[in-house]
Length: 110
Length: 114
Image (cartoon, rainbow over all chains, first blue to last red; front, side, top):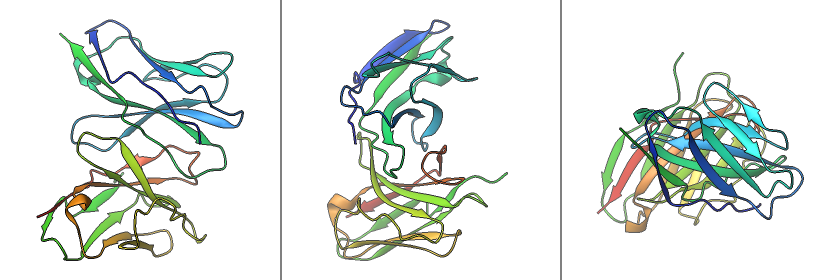
């Protein structure tokens, strides 16, 4: 399975957009990109996933580059409750394993 | 509705003892996963159950680790002869069908081996 690379930490001002990058340069054609987040002392929470096209839901937007080697998770209006570790994961469409890595620790600042 | 539950929430055990961790998935979810999360690290996949298929055990770190699931219900993760490096939070997740679907995580069991 492809591995992902994320910055270890980021800050974002409350109310501003948080843009979290992820590199997955070895991704293959059938591998999906998933984003989860983990708020301190809780289990991870699903955010969004995509294959090729950009995706948007009530929580976030996922922008995947045309070559699919990187993606960006966008939280359009960050709140203090968005402070968490954000994991970018690639998963083979027929596989069972998710490789969470160490993620990006996002701190939303008042 | 009820989410994924795990018990106990905390477990302290002496090195060399066996421990059993329990996971109750969301009703109707056929897929169940176990992960381990060491302090300050990401999640490590341990094992995956899908319906009545043979489980994917490829993430189990040693033969001291085993897991069972009866049908589409409760799962238990057993660690025999615990070691200090087994100290971690053990997370269980379930999904409605297979791993292409959103995983719902439980709160985890914090295991401390002294």
